[in-house]
Every structure is written in structure tokens, then in C-alpha cells.
Length: 184
Picture 1 (tube, one colour):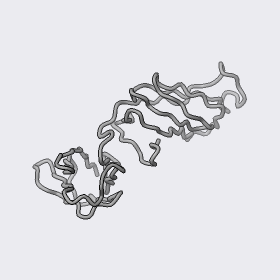
Picture 2: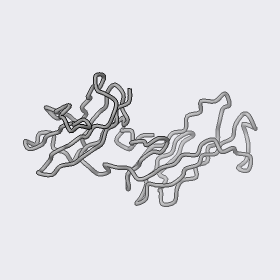
Picture 3: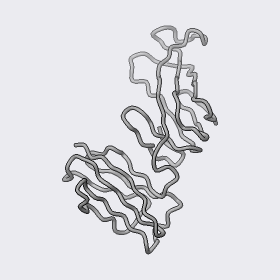
Picture 4: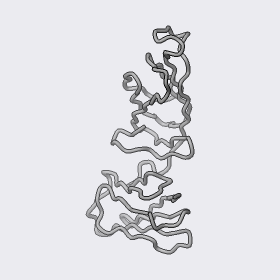
């Protein structure tokens, strides 16, 4: 799954966290020994489908990004050429309302292991003089200070302890926060 800007949305366990009024591309990868074809997509209420092609669909979440998506398809295990009544449900995916939607930055992957990326939206002025970004550990000790903003910033965490970290962005006199989990 990716959003229209090519980024990966956040995930909490097995639930994708999506933003309202955002376009996403949702893919179904078949990792079984049985081929699939003739995909049918049952989208959550309120979502708009732009187009579909084989194993992916382009959607907009509308005002409610939450819901359940189900995908059915013909399978070679049953019958490669089948009608709608013979299709097998091959995927059920749950979605919920994301965090940091419409903000100035996103953090992924989260949880992270050896590195993560802070990506700034087009609304953020990379050359703003009053902007700062700091990362604190769970004891509120500064762990990292970002110097020199770029569209995407990779931060390496090999020597960081497992746990929660707080990301604080100051921009235009306002603070914006993210929570990052490190798991090695």
C-alpha cells in the first residue's frame, strides 16, 4: 500500500492507518502456490474508487478512512475461470483513522529497527529559519537534533535502545509531535 505521493502509510499491528480525503494505491500480493485472477474489490463505505487493474485499486478515503476491505478472486485451486459466485475471498484488510494527517511531516517505518525516515510535506518550508526538530528518549533526554532540513531525512538507530521516542517539530511558532517506537 502507498499513498499518492509514493509514501507508505503508518500501520498499527495489522491495521493500516489512513488519512481522510487521501488517495492511496492498494495492492494484493499473492504469495501462495495458487494463482489468482478476476479480482473483485469490496471497499469500505464512503471510499471512492478511481480505477482498478488486476491486483491493485486506486481509491480516495473521503471523510472516513476507517473500514474493512475484502478482495475476492478466481483461484487455480478452485477454477481459474469462474463466475462471481465461485470466487474465493483471498484478503480481508482493516483500516482506521491515521495520525499526523495533513501535518508537516511523517515518520516511517514506525515501529523502526535500524533506521527511519522523516519526510516533510510540500506545506513545510525546508528553509524556514525558525524551524527545528528534536528527538527525545523516554527520559526526555535529547537523542537527536536534525540539522539542515531535506525533503526526506534518514535517521539511523542502530545504537538506540528499544522503546518510545518523542519527535518534536517547531515550525511557525507552533510545536508538532510524533511518537516513534524502536524495536530491534
